[in-house]
Image 1 (cartoon, helix red, strand yellow):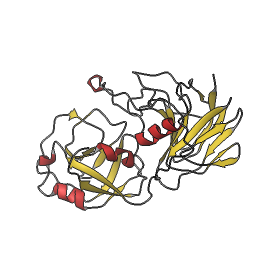
Image 2 (cartoon, one colour):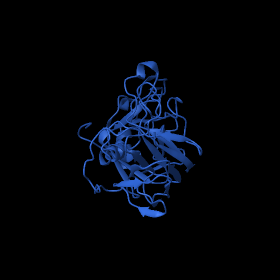
Image 3 (spheres, helix red, strand yellow):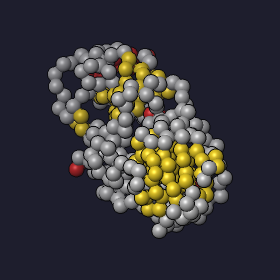
Image 4 (cartoon, helix red, strand yellow):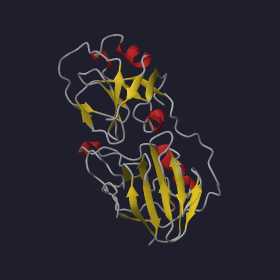
Amino acid sequence: MTTLDVLETGPLATVQDLGRPGHSGLGVGESGAMDRGALLLGNRLLGNDPGCAAVEVTLGGLVVRADGPVAVALTGAPCPATAAGTPVGANAPVALSAGAELRLGTPAGGVRTYLCVRGGVDVAPVLGSRSTDLLSGLGPEVLRAGAVLPVGTASGPWPGLDQAPVPAPTSDAVTLRVVPGPRDDWFVPDALATLTGSPYAATADSNRVGMRLEGAPLPRSREDELPSEGMVRGAVQVPPSGQPTIFLADHPVTGGYPVIAVVVTADLDRAGQVRPGRTVHFREASSPS
């Protein structure tokens, strides 16, 4: 079996697939890739099943060595990369020979780059998924230097694509569409208008669990306690500080703070690429799709 030997990881590198839905009743969140579109694209470029696992690389710095010939693709946030010392591009299949090292630099925009491999990263699944959940601790460990990643057996034909012309994650302000949340009535009447009419900044405390924001506070009209209730990816939860947090891939399955809005599913990949310090705008959507 071919393997990828991890030599360096950068700030954070984890194995991710499309997650483990359907286990919230057990207290287990879905997890999975923060930018699912990027993962799906990488698997499509390599002729993989859509659910094949890849390495999610946060702000670059990953170095791996192939112990045998293997094809890979880099998607998501484009970063300077070399294979055996030769520069390689994003959103295209790249052939690695035995002993070749793949090195990833820091992306100019966005946060997360996906190293997809033909055959997928074949670590042991937990509850049907190979995703690392940082909140629950389920799935494979966070990658460290010295880790060895087995590569699965390719089963699908090559799609015949040389490169996918997709836009890169922006380093500019990001607009996320939202629909009113289940507890928008816990806030003062103009709170949702404040959320959608004010700029917010992603803070350095943001991670795979959630994006913490700073900006105009969202005051409550009720001060009593809210019993814990189910949470979804994209929920905009507001603690007593009035500063909103967007729940992301590794969010808890329940929460006790009111949810004023929910980011529509189509914009969650964009949320997963927002770098700390970037400006986030919210806009009310006409539908949740």
